[in-house]
Length: 180
Image (cartoon, rainbow, N blue to C red; front, side, top):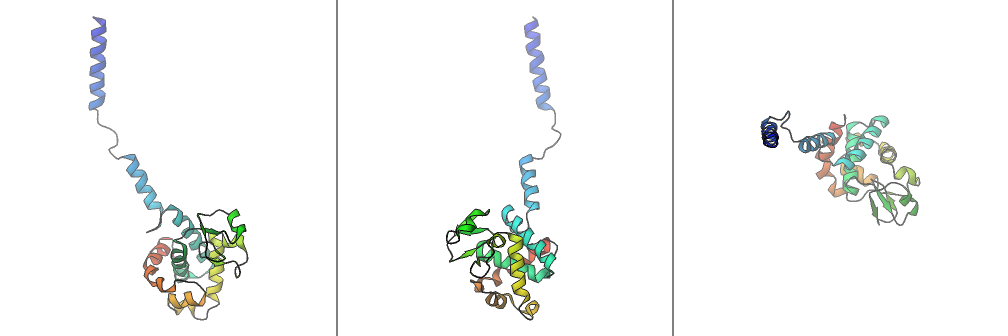
């Protein structure tokens, strides 16, 4: 008899537990994805956001404002999709953290800065430092604050300048979300 009572008790307990409402109806995996999506800058994944945040911080430090930030983000998106590129032609670049290995002459980093011009590979392979190099070049251009982004691209020796204007909206949103 005790065996039947124990089984009945277990069955009733299991049904009672099954029928209890849960404390939360939110799927935690969805909540984690929502949190991750909020942590990313608009239109960027987590890796791109990490680099964009470094570029934005450097824009603030160098005092180039929202437009300088937009120029750098557009450049990074166009040149490398905001990824850090090492280059087999620049063996020292392979010693630094990178996401991809490129083959564009001697160009490295997010902005594909040629090592023949930007000789500090450690800086080229660092998002904030390489953004600082880009900002220095931009600041040398008289009236850059009032130039269109394609003209600035051409004056700073970057390629794919015709693709820059179509990415300005994304860059504007990224820089704005980063506080510029």
